[in-house]
Image 1: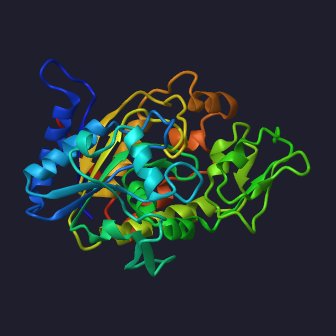
Image 2 (image 1 turned 60 degrees about the vertical axis):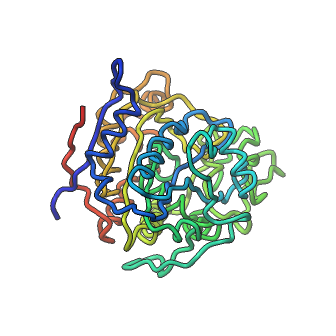
Image 3 (image 1 turned 120 degrees about the vertical axis):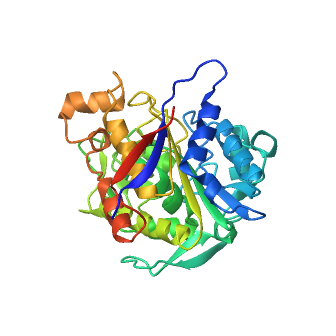
Amino acid sequence: MNKSKVYFTDMHTHDGYSLLDKLEKLITKAGIGEIDFNKRFAVIKIHFGEPGNLSHLRPNFARLVVDKVKNLGGIPFLCDCNTLYTGRRKNAIEHIESAAENGFNLYSCGCPIIIGDGLKGTDDVEVPVEGGEYFKTARIGRAIMDADIFISLAHFKGHEATGFGGAIKNTGMGCGSRAGKMAMHNDGKPVVDQDKCVNCKKCAKECAQNAISFDTGKAYINHDKCVGCGRCIGACNFDSIYNATEGAFDVLNRKIAEYAKAVTDKRPCFFINIVNNVSPFCDCHGQNDLAIIPDVGLFASFDPVALDVACADACNNMPVIEGSRLSKQLEEFGNKGDHFHNCFHETNWRSTFEHAEKLGMGTQKYELITIK
């Protein structure tokens, strides 16, 4: 397979040339205008950020993409699906209120916000997964599948289960309905290292299933209730919770790739990654940790596989921010491979892209084209 083109611009600006100007030039050069938007619905899939988290994408980026789609004749809307875990984005009412709190609304972004899987996360459609090994069909938010064109606008950051989240995670996990998210998560169940648990109970606050108890003075996870979402792993500051199922994260990654395949098949798609505020954790958390590396830049491509791999490579070429989780992990455990694996040693982000490539979603080989 030939190399895919990935377009990149850094974060440097000057008088009269803002970061939004650079983003507009980037997506134009990357070929977004090659898509026929004329009177067609275009879903812009974005993560609005859990309230309390301040590293999510600014709505200004969304507004730029919305205006570009409108100028090309399209009918855009911003979209995300409801969450599986407890929090303020588990139903459409709270989700839209949370988006507004973080600055996303009709007036700031220039288009409506629609929650893809409806009021309670049950408005989905079964979509075929061609070549799927884990799924024959995927449960995707109906509004996302009703759109004619799919655009991913993703904040590229770390993640405690997948290593990082970029275009494919924004597409696969992000577009799954609540039933779809549960299907992707249900292979691995976390357990507690009793010697490390300090009974702080932070894990229980993150569990929407009430699966964690403290009858013995230490956390215990009831696997009959647990759905394997992994929120408790990220909540624990003492590394006492881990996934005991060998290869469970790899299975999760491959399932995400299959859901992304279902979302993107047989319609025009375009992918944008903003690599700034690279927190070690997902924007689903109601807080964000110190970034692990300096801001990198803006990336765009028609190929989500090449795009995410290019972003990961660029991140791994960046210096480590002193005092960050990554810095502390390196001091304690040494270098285990790359920045994202060093943050969370059980993760293996490459398994996502090996499977996505196998499914025909794209290639890990890319040509990086720099836009000034």
